[in-house]
Image (cartoon, rainbow over all chains, first blue to last red; front, side, top):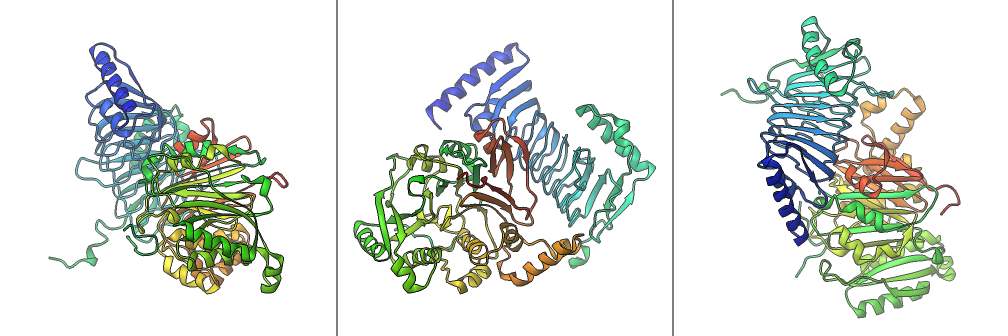
Length: 264
Length: 365
């Protein structure tokens, strides 16, 4: 680490001590800090922190179990990786692999996200105001009470929910362009969890191992919960969003790979 | 002893960036160096490089050959060889900056040359084919000499090191061009040598590549039938030759070339509504099956007057495009686009296999 960086960290530690004593809002000017220095500065604070001027630093808030972090600028890849309960709000776009393997907590993105958002997430919730790239929700999984939820307000690229093993993926398709709500090959390898798309999905081709059906009244009750939360976060009108057909996609079998293995 | 490219294969994460002015306005190398800084962690210090277009306007009609030499004797021998077939208008050391981050540099020279008319008529070759053939000859037969740039009014600058340091090493702030591409290397298959850094070039084509193509050997076997020699075992080299073959030799458009190397799946082709497009995609996949590139890649191809960015058809690598006024910015990460232009607009990610082609307005470069 350069001398300049070490000095900066010392400065931030001091200002952090100061703020912990009395001030509620703390601003960390990211500047040239690398991801290690940022996370070090974040650790040990449960308060409201604003990271200002992010420029591609990876792993921001990795593993954090508490706190409330606002991110300004462009956070780097794997924002909130292994997140364990903290809340992150991004004021613009985020890059790839947001919430990689996150366990608990919330990530709210007021812009678009790159590829593989919610990569292998196994708990917590991610809300994206705009579009997502390829492979959103790849290999999401659930266990007992841990059910991850990924809500995307706009449209997504191809391979949505690839290898999805659990949890809920909701795509609302609210962005105003002529693209389909999802690119090619959604649900490839999906074998668990549920996907809800705000579309009749007539223009989409799903693989054989999943069933796509119009939402039932029970589904709609569940959908309404997610939509309400999305609309509260991003100031949309709930009634407008709900005024549309919804399609629910689930895998046909709980364990489609059973026949591939020898029973023992 | 350090093993060089081509002698060993170790079974890539990388960073790429590019900027182009559609009005042909010239920029120094500083913005593109800035782009590489937030992506520092995508490289590991074993290679960085840049290509600048429009940087040698005073020699715009001459081929600018950039060469690495291992020693003075090699240089002398190579210069003698060059003089046999080229008029060498100027030969000089490429100016560099001594810095602790960049070590073990070879001798780095450039020559502005024009092929001798008599040689061309003897061989009955056009100028470009002759230059391409000569570059192949030097790189395969002349031990210790390596041509790493051979276009007109463009130049490649590459080294072992982090890209931002490589840019400073080559004093890129002293050049100005209408288009720049850049690469930060994280070699996974080869040990990392100066010649193996990106961009890979042939004539005015320069390719920067993030990824790891799994069709390398199939592609190599095919392309070597047409006189190309893949000497470095790195996949980017074969991409460069494929694009040269498709675009220069076979006269395909860039979009058609993109449809060959990142061909859509048959199911996607069959679902096309436009009958002409469907037939064309079928045709290209049928005629050039061995040039389909599989495995993850995101590339930027620079050429005289423009660039093309392309992802593999599964989009296993990231790429972001942004715009501001007449400039277009492309990078592996949005942060890099913002580093070049904080106010960049229309940030979007091209789909897998969807080429982004940007050209400078006619007559502006």
